Length: 273
Image (cartoon, rainbow, N blue to C red; front, side, top):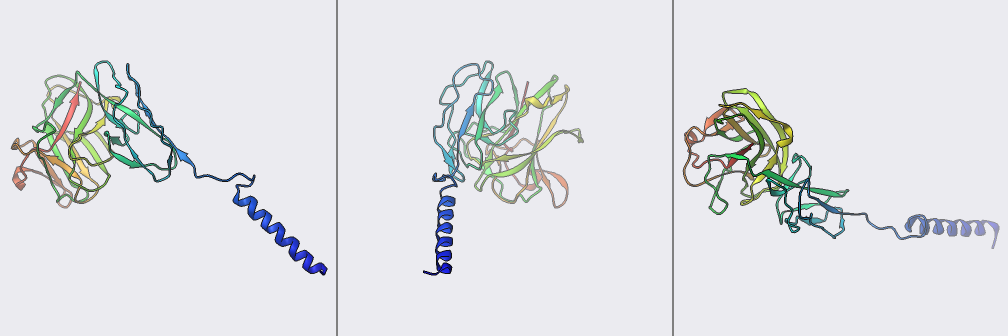
C-alpha cells in the first residue's frame, strides 16, 4: 500500500472516530432530550399541601392540571384554581385543563379569593345552567358590564368571567373603567385564557391596589383580540337593562346589548373587599 492510500485510510478512521464521539455527546455518553417539571405552589397557604406531579415532560408534551388534591387552605380565603404567576397576572388553569410544556419548568401558583369579598354581578349563572356564547365578535370588540355603584370605599380583588363556546387559548384584554368617566381607567392589561364552558376565569388583582370610592360604578370590559369563539358567555334568565354593553371596534362606539337584540347578562363579575 503506498503512502497516499495509507493517508486516506488514516483520515477515514479519524473522521469515523470523531463522528462516533460527536454522536455520543463528545464524552462517550448517549445524549438525551431535556425533561421539565410542573411544580405546584401553595402561594401563601396556611394549611394543606401543594399537589405533586412526578411526571417528567419533554418539550411539547401535554400537561393535565391537577386539582387541589392536597387540600390547600388559606385563612379567610378560598381556593380558585392555579395561575402561572404568584400575583395572578399569568395564565389561569382549572383542574383537568391541559397545556403544552415549553422549554422550561412550569410553576403553578394557587389562586386565593377573599371570603370577605363582595361580589358585584348582574348575571344569575350558578354553574349548572345553559349559557349562550356570542360568535359575532371580531378582534377589538368587547363585552362589558356596569357594576355598582358601591356603597363604601373598596379595593378590587379580582375579576371573574365565563369564557368559552369553543376555540383554543387566546389573549384577551381586561379593562376596568369608571363608568361615569370612561377616560378614567383603573386597570387595563392582557391575559392568556384557556376557554371553558363551565369554569369561571379568575384574574387576581389584589396586589394591584385598585381602590375605588363610594358611589363608583365600574364598567368591566373583556376585549377579544381574535374573531369568533371563544367569547364571553351570557346567562339565559333575562337581562338587566342598561347594564350590559358591547364595544364595536368597527364603529368605535359603545352600544347597549338589548338594543342589538342580545339576550342575557354577560357573565362578568368583580370581587371587592
